[in-house]
Image (cartoon, rainbow, N blue to C red; front, side):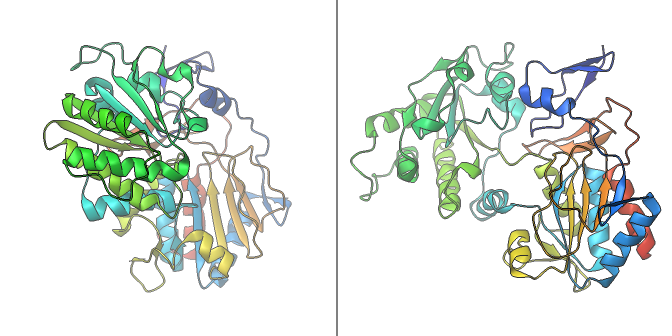
Amino acid sequence: MPAVTCPFCGIFCGDLAFENGRVDTSSCAKAETGFARPVTVTEHSVGGRKVPLAEAVDAAAAILRAARQPLFTGLGTDLLGLQALLGLADSTGGVLDRWQSSPQLANLGVQQRVGCWIGTFAEVSNRADQILIVGRDPAPFFPRLFERLVHNPTPLYRKNAPQVTYLGPSELRPADRAHGGTDLAADITVPANQLYEALLVLAAEAEGRKLPESVGTSLPLAQLMGLAQRFKDGAYGSIIWDVGAFPPVQAELMVETILRIVRGINLTTRCSSLPLGATDNAMGVMQAALWQAGWPMRIGFGEGFPRHDAYLYNAERMLSGGDADALVWVAALSAAPPPATSVPTIAVVAPDTILATPAAVEFRVGIPGVDHAGTVVRADGVIAVPLGKTRDSGLPSTATIVNLINERLGGEP
């Protein structure tokens, strides 16, 4: 019975059995829904009118030829698709940024400034005896994270199940089922507006400093100090967070404080950080952009070379501020429709995507890992994961469509 890899969250579980055209999803609801997505629309269109592929390619090329600063965003596809999009953005002088990339860039920016110890999935599942989850339950976004990283039945370097602690608002704590099979420490629940203060307490304890005078007396200080001590006494700790759970105005401060905690614990034992980013191959977008353009995202090619500007090339700001005169929206891994806009839109979308308003040009492409093979980058950033194919829909890949447009414009395929 061959195994396939699930493309629908950043863990990219590669242990799903595939037999007789059906995927055994190991009770993962996200995978079950993903592999069952229907092939609703296969035709390409121009202005809502079904047309042959060549005509749609001509129409898309005409829009990009007339644009002064096209925006390439969404970017939910495999690595070959991303490489093709980078080439097309380069040849058209466009801007490339993943939609809603701010949380991911907040993590990256802090890591660049202060340094960090990043753990891999394998390290956490085989070594961690203390795990802290900050901000919210990761299970809705990464359904098998506890199963794969926490409940490893045959860890290589630890004897007992890890002690798991959650720090964050009570309404976002992991469900009881998520803790099954672990030595669960008492969760430390604090209101969202006190989470940063709680992290400051942990940082002070980890670094052996006095508590900040600004720390509120309503915090559960004894629990926080006990948590810091458990990490200091442990053999290998791991702190897991999703920066999307943090208030945007405090996100970078909170990530920096988490990395201070990790650094302080590493003075006497071992501890790593594991930031969980967005899905839809978000890590692959960053890696592909780094490989080909030298910048992680928010890249402009209009000056004849790749230029990074975190403010000017923010996709949401550009679209709302009128700085883009054409939009290329790519969402092959999810069924996300393009954002509402008055600029001409080229939508490269999965076969089950519903568009409220027809795009100027619409291409229906296959879902990587379902309709065609591909490669994605796991959320911990250490490996590129191959995807297989589980059905014959006849749909082209994102890379195929984008390369055809680039060829029509006279660029490199």
